[in-house]
Length: 160
Image 1 (cartoon, rainbow, N blue to C red):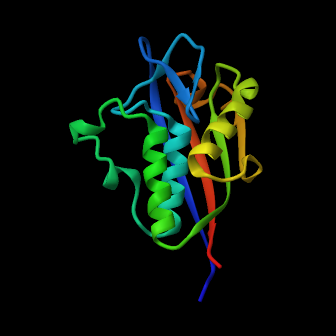
Image 2: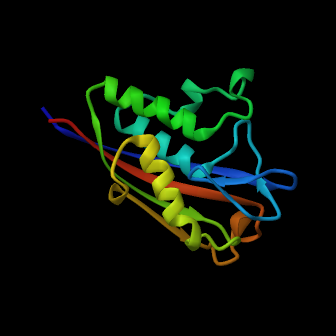
């Protein structure tokens, strides 16, 4: 029997005025925030999809559908906690997370340590198991035009 599983995740949301910018559970000062049914935290959403994908359990839309009013404005860290409970119930543990946020602005490097600690706390893993990188899209496409922000994540799960 295979004792490791790998999943990948991706999420993108539009930037809009009048919204908070939340990434990895951390509020980041910016003139715009991400538009979505929940807090639109693309990094946390990509990580959740990677975790669920590793176990062939679908995506976050299956568990937290945007058509359900109870998830309106939801804190994505709360949703991540629920996804991690599913992973644990299935008998798996998180080995590590590797992720990338793609945004032209704001510069995210100063916030990465806070994001790592926020996510690690909710996932009940050591911070050194989470990698977050930030890059731009070199002004190409909708991300480059500052219309949105996206994130990619890979999750490694294992069981003893």
